[in-house]
Image 1 (cartoon, helix red, strand yellow):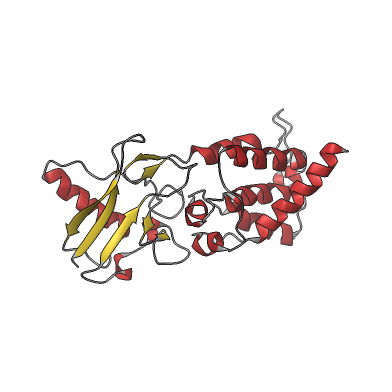
Image 2 (tube, helix red, strand yellow):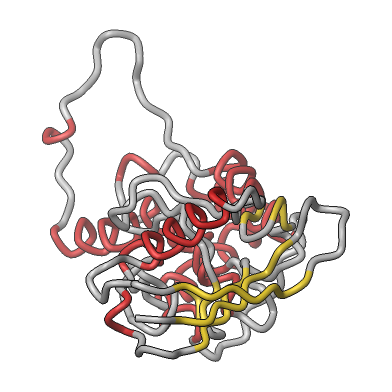
Length: 250
């Protein structure tokens, strides 16, 4: 395939970025989207030009590093896949593809298509953990009974890989789907009860401090999420927050 790429280029966080046109050819439909970018970068290197910076690591849809806004959609046109799982068979010969970084105040551009998502790390640090016995007398996890329904819901929430697609696709750049997933996976389990109330208060406070917007209730985040995290987690977080807020003031 021959493709025309319109890619966001930006030297550093303070410089002004712009869309730059590139042409690529001999692209196989069996290539992943990132492999296509590898071909482009190899061509740029051979010409002595600066390659395009983009995040990637596992390339298996696990790590959450890849984060491209492709033709106006987070991770591209396919559903329930990350950018690294997107294949060129989703495009046609002669297509023009726009490739941009995540757009959010809390995700500043570092270079080209790379954004700083450390805001997510700070949200996790504020309360995304559980207290465990490290004295040497630890209890086997299987000794703590967990209802299957709760275990299933917690597991579904825990599949969130923190890629940030929910933020990028939300018109308010809300991180409520991400935050609620991290809160849900712990609050549903007996091991997460010790910090339950403090967790939701601290994580929501940090989320707001990072500059993320509020939920729009449009559901775009759930549609674009590569792990199909449910909006039910946001409803659960709101309930947890209200209860914890009331108890903290009583």
